[in-house]
Image (spheres, rainbow, N blue to C red):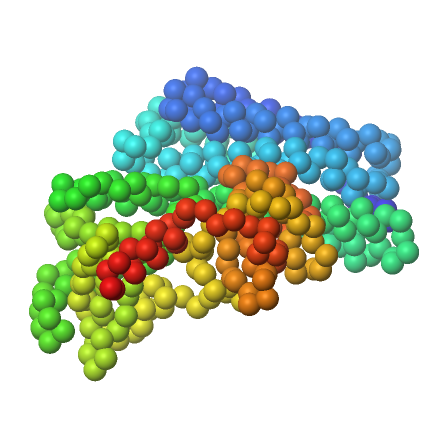
Length: 416
């Protein structure tokens, strides 16, 4: 398979010229003085990686033709995929933080970024520079991830136009899978950083004087639903104080409005999600929220604003399981692999001794469906073409202490 690219040969040098201009911005003293150096470093690494891949692309083509025939585009993508993933992973993280900083100049002090008037003035002058080509800093921040998202589209077209027996087909399909994985990884990182920023905003609004403080801003956590409910003294009560309920992926927080003018809330209850149960009370529009703790349980009677909102709270607390999974993501038994297993069927997963897994289903035939636990930033595993979810023999696993096991013990002790 060959790729025919129609563009002027000064395109790479033109792109690098624009990149150098952006580097003069992000490495300027004013930019760095505003604690935006993480983005500056990420952009520097990104420009270096882009220069490397463009140089490789240039060597694969003839510089004196208008239509440049490149016979090894898939090989070039594969050669640079890991480097691209590492750079874009960090770039997306830093860029998301920077975009937040630019959009929220009065952010809480817990954030490292605080744009100043000098920076805004500097960026205004930079935007008017002819070298900026009419683009503002936001455009430069968004451009690399947007360009990355086009790689799978290009490779899809190449795979589609490649004959079945062509020796380049396998490399093109592998390059397509790699680029899809890189895009997915970067999108996941952007969502993760956005979630952390949202959690930090929520944490800044909570007052913990009535109970021990719980950590809100944790990697992997996200806000599922938030809303105002009425706290009732009995199912038949007509009125009661308003409370704010925060449902996260793995935690539930209940708080009372402390100061309406500043939107602060006093927390009076908080539990891991595996220690919370929300259910309807029959013959009533009231919801029962049970919060378990060691040898005790607290029951809150809550009324939603509308019948639809009541249904939505129930669905948020008790989502339908995915596929054949029995355990929810926040309430899975954990296990260590004590015996290696090599997958023989497509629905199995290969595991090594020492791997940590979450059990999502227990079969009746001696098999368990598991999800491999990856440390954040394990790019090589995330980019590999092997799956991270599948079935393994139960004998390969040894269950270990987990939130699921602890919650199960607490609930059992309360219900005796």
